[in-house]
Image (cartoon, rainbow, N blue to C red):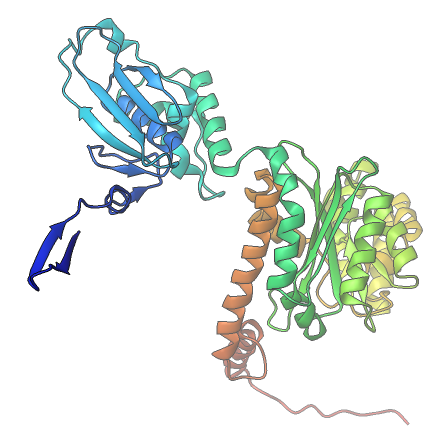
Length: 472
């Protein structure tokens, strides 16, 4: 830095000051990723851990092994494991900050690269794990330990055992997602941010007596505001989580006016029991209230039936057709081929005459099946006896479709799982909004397309007048 000042004679004199070391150090780009493929003198890393991980990756890629000569909070000095080799690496802290700068790096080895030292180089799970982290960024990506073995051998010449590859995968997931137990500690802060970002949402966190996690409930404001424009049919389901601490994810969804799945709420609980389902429906009622002709459809879970009768007394509760059919197959051993078609036709009957006729046929095949269906209650599984209009929601297709979409995400820690669900609902909402803005018909795209197809087919039909005589 230069500075002009006036001397005693009135002339201008130029003084030269050395450049500020702090300013010079910060002029370089700060590297934050340990997957840096090219390393050279002058590079600046965000901290010592990053530069150390980068050098481990570098040693694997270039097939050599180093040892640490000196390591402290201010310096990181590496040399080759071969005593006669001149290879070395040195990085130090920038002005006692967390950032490290490479001061010296001699990349040429003077030892024999075919030495046994290099053939048996270190292959830690942390090193290989850091190299395969990008493979696991998308939860839907399937990248097995066998894939790690194959890629490490073909790309880097590393012959890993299956157990080494498995440990590398676990390390990669830990780098990416953190410790599963720490995921629970993030929930209070996450829920606070969720409420601030999505005003009008209902998010609840319940802890056990020992202050440990018990339940978590999320109903986003976009779902709450859209509920009044959807069918009042609530499809409820529970599915197992596959993360370190397991648990169950409960979901509720319905169909919107366009005939697409409309998720309403999602909850993580310890297990499906009376207490968890009751708490779930209490939070659901706070978020969505109660509507005329509203009903719940699910499998024949006794805890759901108890919870709805307490939280929503008098609200109809229906069962999936398929769930009852699987029970019939397991309880009764004869006539499955005949009963299959008869049962589903009976459940879908639109008139009482159709229903009664088909029930008689079921009785002819196996009277015990008819008695079983009667004991369940005709109103729980048939269209014609339903006390409210459950529309086309006779199967578990909505729940199964939602489970299929979240299959891989159910392996994530709870913090990442809840983030995935929020992102999924946000993406679906945006896609539906764009499609709705491009729709200029009274019906949604799905039903308007069906109407157009039927209209096209009707053009080929011939209408004939029929003389009708009514007896007086």
